[in-house]
Length: 318
Image 1 (cartoon, rainbow, N blue to C red):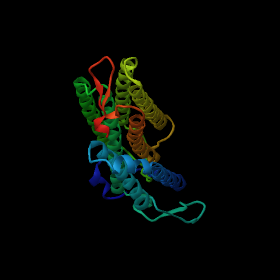
Image 2: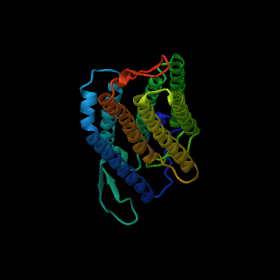
Image 3: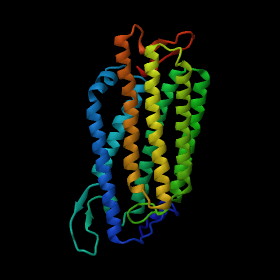
Image 4: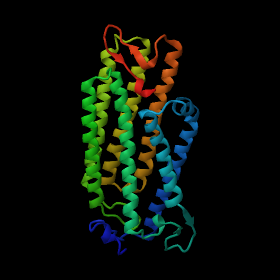
């Protein structure tokens, strides 16, 4: 056992009970998943680059631009570093009964150091929470604008976001402290903090979607054509995010409890999906802005709601 493990945390132990072949298989799956998710990020970046240049790089610096750049480039940089600094494999067949994977970095020197495993898991956890928070902020800003920058909606979202982030941080810190891992840095059981994290994520998405649907339904009969198109896009995008987040949490957590652990692939799947979702939400609204502005006398940044004093103000998204 690595003598540095006890310096990390007394409960964060590596228990070598599995065969070398099983550990090597987990390592290889983690490598393949990271490669696939990194490629997916680069493909999405290339696909959206023209719109990104038009709507992001040519726009003045504001909150939305900072969120986009953070979600796109910081996540892309992190994923690339994980790939090229932590996931480089050198595969050599040694013998049939031994580990056939010889690795060149710390994350693939089985048994993996407890200190390295703890640092890697902590970094992945922190980036996952950050990318999820950026996604939630974008969804909340859109709904806040849909409700005409209502003070009550704003306070609700601020309180909800603060509470949700606090729950996520506390639950994941608790998870790191309680986690027991094997020699491949894969959890042996599902800590209780994971359930709190999953419940927090699902609750936040249900709140956002519910307020989105409420705004769309309230304004459906009074909004002009441009406003209806905006609200429809918001409901559509919010529904897809709701389905994605709820499906991820409701599938991976029970799977890890009753079938097998997924910590070696979960981060590589969830972090890129959060990043892609955030960037596409922003680009979708900007593309819609251009479409509405070219066919309507009023801009997306200030669309009046017929028969009400409220406006759907999307100034923050421009």
